[in-house]
Length: 427
Ligand SMILES: *Cc1c(COP(=O)(O)O)cnc(C)c1O
Image 1 (cartoon, protein in one colour):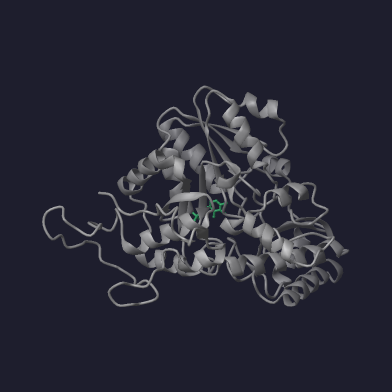
Image 2 (cartoon, rainbow, N blue to C red; image 1 turned 120 degrees about the vertical axis):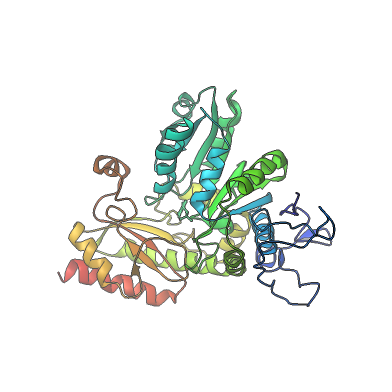
């Protein structure tokens, strides 16, 4: 069956003018209920739908193939990811990854950024390679020059997998450069961007030429650390690919619950407000870390001192650029997402002390929620990477990763400063 599925290049368009990001976040996919007038979409838990005659129905048959809450969320996401026309939601970011990689079929080759999300690496190597013969070449897509990237291409290269910034060392990939390399090669692979870290607010990869955008909605899009979910978004010219992936979404069946879709849609309504606050707070914390005598090195692409700061600026989405330019000019940098990594002076002991001395930064994995979190990648999120590889990626035992939340800026800065003082100066 065909379900109206986020084919909404017309949605959010009013009198010929497209509504802004925040307006679309609140209104697209959230039209008042025609039966009751309810302003907020009701949660529709029914797994099945009455048919008036065989095959005669209102667009819904069985909840795995489509339900009102998932469709509503998919409409919101297709509208928020600028340049998007089709969105498909899945039970997790990982289920989204799995479905995309399965769609490539047997014996395909892909190129992936070398410090890809751990779960994505695991799926590529331990599941797709072992079960569908997928070959993956991991390339430092930040550091490698064009010729080096091109040597990784093969006749059967079907996809290039990008994350930018990468996790946890926040390397920036020049998406338009990789897109033009892909287009220049006869194998002409699809370019996919996992846009989880910046969210549709700070980055619009489709406008930079990407074919597929993937999100772990678990992070910024839902934003309240209470839903695990994922999604992919495609531009209008990929209608055939959207149909194929829609088929796999239903056939594989890794679909989210209506309740989770409702929660994620509610979260997405404030994405623009939260991302601005995450960005402003992260810049303030990054500056405090930079000025601290207890910090060796701060990695935040929004800092003017970051080696790829100009690329960060160039790669801002149109709506994020408008926001950044509305702020008073700061010679030290601009907001660029909410993630920071830093190397504390000393080693594992100081890092551990910092993580337990922080009051507002909760020691926990994950990211993107309203509350601030801190973690030690070498032991936690990236603990499964062999030590030599970790060292090559710059993930030492004193590297701390912060997910800066939306609490009051001065409280977060004060918390980081007191935790550094306790960890390094008063040990
Ligand atoms: C968390 C995350 C994923 C996986 O998403 P889940 O919802 O946890 O399955 C994929 N990519 C990135 C960058 C992530 O941070």
